[in-house]
Length: 144
Image (cartoon, rainbow, N blue to C red):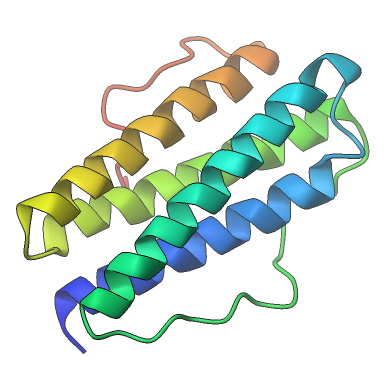
């Protein structure tokens, strides 16, 4: 498997996990966050589908989404929902950062940077919802 195919597959896996996480947290998100949750999960679906097109064009096979994913904390209220949504955005950011380093075309690097940017913006929203400061990080997707 080429680095490009592997990187795209890993990004799709991260997107599938994020979509699952947004689905689980919908019932627990505060009423003021429900529209945001809907917008953000829609963005993840669009990204996943675009990555799927890129993956098949690169000769890869679309991975199946898992039946379920392990969340870092039990979701029981708006705060725990925001916590797992932040974690999902951070995982996607790591996948996009790795993708940018491994893909073999400028167009795919641009897709990775765009995906990383989207994750960074959404993560800042969840940090703000959790009262964390700063709400942004210098290097989104940094594995350290």
